[in-house]
Each structure stands twice: as C-alpha cells, then as structure tokens.
Length: 417
Ligand code: 3BY
Ligand code: FES
Ligand code: FE
Image (cartoon, protein in one colour):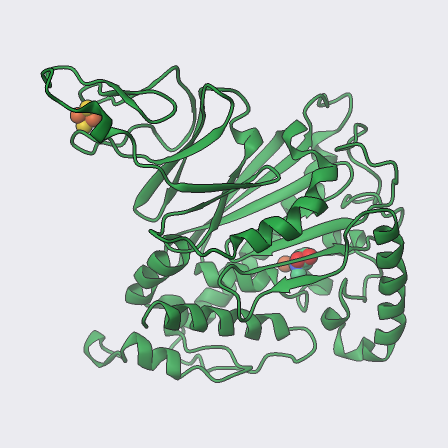
C-alpha cells in the first residue's frame, strides 16, 4: 500500500473486528504511533518509577516519554516531585536521562538554577527586573501509589487514578515499598510496537511452551492463575480451579490481605487489573525452586504464604511477593521499538551475597523477559508481512487481548479519533 492510499486513523479503527487481531496498521503506522504517544503516554497516567529510584533528597531520575522528558526528584522536605525536563530560559534539557544527584537543579546552558521545589533562584545576566516567580519549573502531575510513581502530562489528568490508589494502597501497604531498594535493573529494547509488548503480557497461551522458568513458579503447569487463562483442554478443571482460588482468596482476606481480582479495563479511563495469585511449590516466590530468594522479607507480614499480587497497567506490569517484587515499565521508542525496563526490589537492608543471591533472585523474570522479547519480535515481523491477515483470539486464553483493544479504541475515540 502506498502512503497515499492509507485509510484515515478513524477508518483504520473501524476496520477492527471484535475478537480478532486488528489491522497491521495498529502496530506499524507512523501516524498512529504518534497518536499513541499523545493519547496513551502524554494524556494517560503512566508508571515511570518507584520511590526507591530517588531514595534521598537531591536524587534525580529523568525519564523520556516520547519526545518529552520529565524528571523525578526528591525535594528537601523528602517529597517526590516531577517536572518537565526543560529549562525555563531557552528550553535546554536540564538533566540527562537516568539517575543523578544534585544540590540544586542547574541548567548546563546558562546556569539558571532551580531549587528542588522548582523555584528559580539564580538567573545570571537577566537583570533585577526578571520576575523569578514566573519562571519556576513546570510541574507534572505525580501520584505515588504506595511507592509506585505514576505521572500524567495531560492538562486534566484522568480522575479515576483515585480508583487505582484506593484499590492498590491496602494491597501494597503491608509490603512497605518505602523500605525497599533496587537490587537489579534490566533494560531490553524490544523490536515491536508497545501494544504487542502489553498484549503479550496479558495472555499465558504462550507460557507453557515458552516460559519453563515462569511456569515452575505458578500453580500447576497446565493451570492458569485465573480460570479465564485455563487452556481449552483444561476447561473441565475450571470449577476445581475456581474452588481452590475461592478458598485461598477467602483465607487471605480473612488475614486482612485484600486478594480478589479487580479489573478496571473496558469502560475505565485508567486501565488496570490486580489479583493475588497462587504460586506453585512452596508458594513463597517466583524463583526456580519456589523458595524465597531473599532472606529479609518485605514489610511485616506474619503470614508466609501471601502469594503474588500482580498489577497490570497499560504501560506496566508488577509482581509483589513476600521476599521481593518486580516492576516493569513499557516506554515506546518508535512504532516498532519499545523499551522494557524491569526492576527487582528487595528490603533496603538486604545484602547481596548474604541475604540473597542475585542470579537466583532474577532467574525467573530475566529469562521470561528475554523469551517474551523474542516473541514480540516475531509478532512484529509477521504483522509487517504483506500476507498478514487478522486472526481470531482464543475465547479461553486471549479474552484479555480483546479487552485491551476495546479499551484502546475507546480511548482513541474519547480523544477524538
Ligand atoms: O500477568 C501475569 O500474571 C502473567 C505472568 C506472565 C504473563 N501474564 C499473563
Ligand atoms: Fe537553561 Fe539558558 S537554556 S539557562
Ligand atoms: Fe510471556
């Protein structure tokens, strides 16, 4: 197809058939990629970091979201702040992407200097009549969900982020994420559109064949963690599975640990799903032997078998276990390139080599991420093939993909596409 004959984005959206993979253009059109950045990354709440990325006052963590860089900084009062990473003088980038430590934020170009609360305090050569109060750093909306940092660049951020906070805070508080540190960080530039990365994380159709390490940590190899993920051949076991989940969930909830599945997917602005999942073997952790990888637990939970809380967003996934957590963030780089950044959290006092063995800690998700990256690349390559045609989703194991697409199209529509 030549550029000239491409359908409009609205027409492309209308070509999507329910319960089927969307047209290739959803994953490889440059114009739709730019729209995606605007709608899903500059107007929705996105997960960008964790409070332990900036543990002390003066710690800075700069993240680029498409062409727009933001910086997270812990201010002198100990509060995380977020600003656009652009100077109020002639706009230069203030800090490089990644982590740094500052006393004040000093622009490298002409040294305009800002306090950590964003106030402009020095503007050499500008004369006494410059009203400094008019040139503070521009704030970005920031919410800490029990230590998980979400930002939104929209003028009017979706208000239903309060639902995410209300649901997640009681689930995450016992893990005391404020008392954690990052034991390991991994970045993969996946060769696929960001939606392929997210979709791949929302189904386990591929898990049994692709992820031996991950499967060994979930309850029963051939079981899903949620009945809707059960393989078709195991549908007759759904009631047995549901009963086990219902019993376990009731037990956790009696212990004061909110556990039931909560889905804010279709029909909500802010997309998330959470559930406390049962794990295999000892049920302690997602490790090769299902035992805790870290001797020091997170938080102060007396119960040892607390399962694995998963949390999905439209640009992230997380797993919170008693001994460690993993948090992955998804940031699009190009229509067919996506950065997946994963962090492994342990208690801040845990010592590598004493309380945990790093290779053991990261064994399951490092392998899983690499295996998933290979699948995402294959998916993108096949979708770019001129012979690609829309295919059907499994109603058993791929329902969540259809839900994601419904949400995606709804959001595009809400933003006028
Ligand atoms: O989100 C989950 O819990 C699982 C783990 C990997 C794939 N995903 C569907
Ligand atoms: Fe920052 Fe000039 S652009 S001080
Ligand atoms: Fe996978």
